[in-house]
Each structure stands twice: as C-alpha cells, then as structure tokens.
Length: 146
Image (cartoon, rainbow, N blue to C red; front, side, top):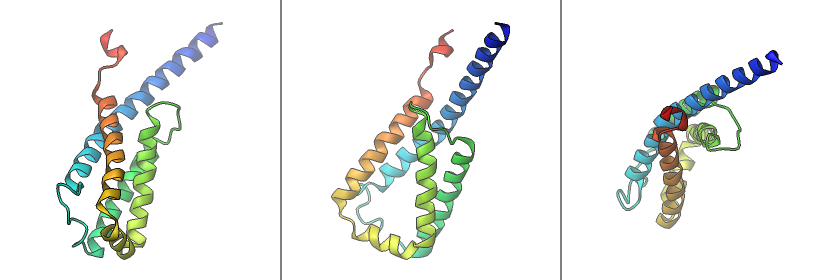
C-alpha cells in the first residue's frame, strides 16, 4: 500500500516536471513563432523570399535544425494534450532546417514560386500554433492558485 502511494507521488512529481519543461519551451518557441510569422507575412513583407540567396536559406536552416534538435532532445513526448505541439515544433523545425540545409537553392526557388495565398494559409496555421503555445506557456495553472 505504501509503495503504491509512493509510486503515485513520484508519478505526480514527474508529471509536474514534464509540464514545467513543456511550458518553458512553449514560452520560448510560441512567441518566437508568432514574431517570425508576423514578420514574414506576405501582407507585411510581400517580396521577402524573392530576393533571398541560397547561403541565407542555408544559414537559417542551420539555426532551425539546431533549435529543433534542442527541443526534441529535451522534449520528445507524444502525449494526448497540448504538449505534443512542443514536440511537433521541434520535429518540424529540425526537418525544415535539414531541408533548407541540403536543398537551399531548391527551397529558395520553391518559396519564391509559391503563391501569396498559399503562404497566408500556411502561415495562418503556424500563427495559431504559436499563439496556442504562447497562451499555454503564460496562462495561470491550477497549481499556481494553491
């Protein structure tokens, strides 16, 4: 009986640590995604990707890969709640970073040839994800009210 209670307590502590890690990463990734998406939005900078050169695309790929790898190393959890967005953010960043690194020229040409409507839809989805991560990271929790 005591062992079962101890195991439940340890599971609860582990779960709270996991949630704290999720909130910390979301608190960094969410606002970063929002700032990136808003600054890249075609209505804000309609010709941003037309003038990019492959070395700049490559460099942004390196940065995205490192960020994605860092997130996945710390937070590779596939839970059935909002924290899976943190994991997906890491995987998406890592894969997109590799794509930009190994196919920088093709990525740049593809981005330049993509219609503004397609960009707005994709960036709208990413904006919602960034806002959700930001909200979950900075909203008050029930344990904070105690």
